[in-house]
Image 1 (tube, rainbow, N blue to C red):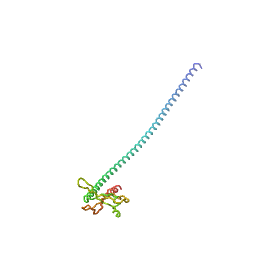
Image 2 (cartoon, rainbow, N blue to C red):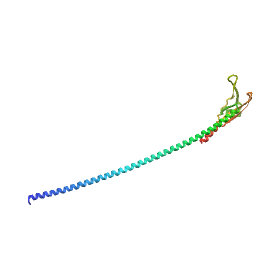
Image 3 (cartoon, rainbow, N blue to C red):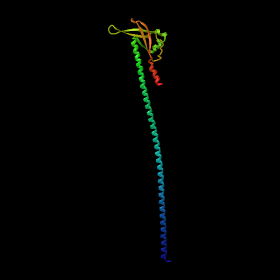
Image 4 (tube, one colour):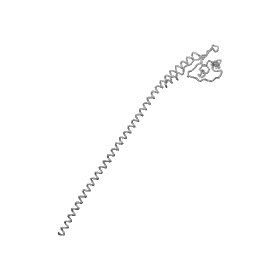
Length: 214
């Protein structure tokens, strides 16, 4: 063969080989690009799925926290309403109690005024004195009643009835809250004729309080 023909054949074969290599390089690069794109899409899809799950979890957790807050707020509101209702009921009961106490006190004052108007020589004695000296008959003789005259303007005297004990004995404390009065009966010559005891049941107030609070 001629030398030119050999060179031409070699050149054509080289071109063909270069063409084959170029085609392989093109297909490999395209395949890499497609795989890279698929990988990116897969990664993006996975990230989107994870982000969606996290977002849904956050929404659920927020909803739970909000629901718990609403429940707690509702309980607090109910407790406040209950407390307000109890306070109103207590206030109403207190007002009713004040009215009852006022009625008892007015009755007590009327009875006290009636006694003082009926018996001029009436003396209030403390309950311990009554329990110690007056109630027990064996010690009644220790009770001393004196009429003390105190000079006033001019020739007039103010007469006061003083009740005391001639002897000190062990004291007995009061057993109730009644108000006791000693009525002294004297004649026109200021001589002692007798004495009697009247008690006003002041302890009714305490009894009513006990009934109210029980």
